[in-house]
Image (cartoon, rainbow, N blue to C red):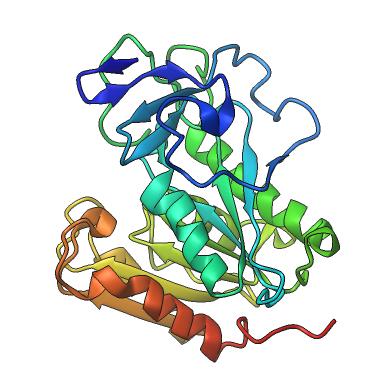
Length: 294
């Protein structure tokens, strides 16, 4: 039930639960792991929904899953994209950084998979935290565990799973991409710099946490980078440095630093309002919106 502007209810019925009804339901929910996710064996609490009806959130995610939003078969191009919402690693913004993005990708002919990766434990009776975890948890059910790394491993597993099951979803194993926002952008970077079998073919870190000048891995994926110059949370500098590192390595990369938009692109009236149009153009230029031959 509602507590001030927050909804803190146990997720008892998936998208039928309070706070989720306004989101388009997925065609399927796909577990990332066949059993308990590695590292979550002692996480014996329930997932919560939170936020507002307009901006629902998921918290205390124990069981990481992909929410499958297929493109219309008549227009599907054979490309898949994982969508990793942001939220400081303690909540997931399921609408404007999740399902809304998936539906926009569907309009492009792209099959979308919203990633509910594991998050930092939040006591439902305590005020929500601010910021993201800076290292291993020191107390609670996740003591000694680094949730940033755990979330990143979920991103890698999502890429791995889709590549292995590409034929099942009617996509090509060399057309697996990922887009992520803020902390979800950090998940994207974990896949980009992680093991080769969990690395996407292309990636879009959007106002990504942890963007930096690290050199890309050999044969690293093409990148679409977007951030606002007035982002006070993660800044724009890391995104610019990452663009330069990719250029230096001779890898495909595109960068948009919008004059205004702030973190989350919530400040409207500038180019950041249309970043998904720019993403569509980039996907088209690189051939990922060209329909794959049967």
